[in-house]
Image 1 (cartoon, helix red, strand yellow):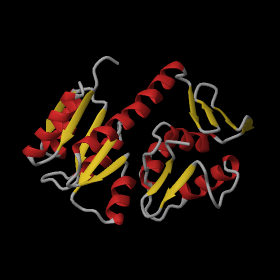
Image 2: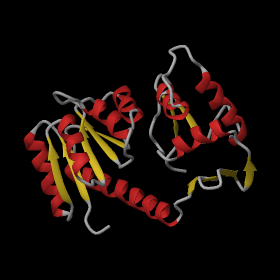
Image 3: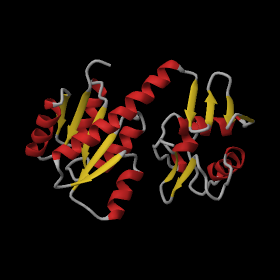
Image 4: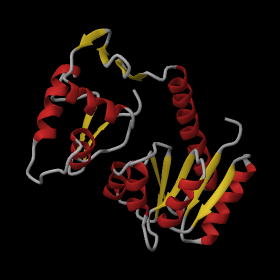
Length: 233
């Protein structure tokens, strides 16, 4: 990938321009948007490798935008917020962000975090390009062509539904999927509010791939939000 494009989304023009200057000095191509709506429109037209996303914005805030982006893309997202409470950070990260910085921030620290996220993202993409049919997460190996699964070299037999759930989560490491979203993507039908089908299948899946279901290594529960597979081991 010759040119790396970064989208900066913030309703304050001064902050957008400041971040853009530092990024351009590092040789990155920079796009700018004033809110989540503009960001989503730009992502439809442009190929972007990283997103810097403010939380507090008019029309569509950063949390809403992050959730919508994660439905389609897994590019790195660094959130910016004036809120510094731990719960605000946890909520921001649970919606699918890869990193979180509190305003006011040091631009040089932001650049360092951008480089770190890009290194990981580009490395993962190179691995995916070499082995298109394989998803590898820690000791978990998923072959989407043969629908085979191995954990630490051990073959694991999954039902078609269990495999579909695992593949969905594994194709979007770090992204939190709600129970409703998993059900609608896997079962291809509307979700019933009191339906615990997904929870039952997640439990069975954990019994097959986790060493200790009480402390799952792969499929993590994000309480009150949903499930995800960790993106780093």
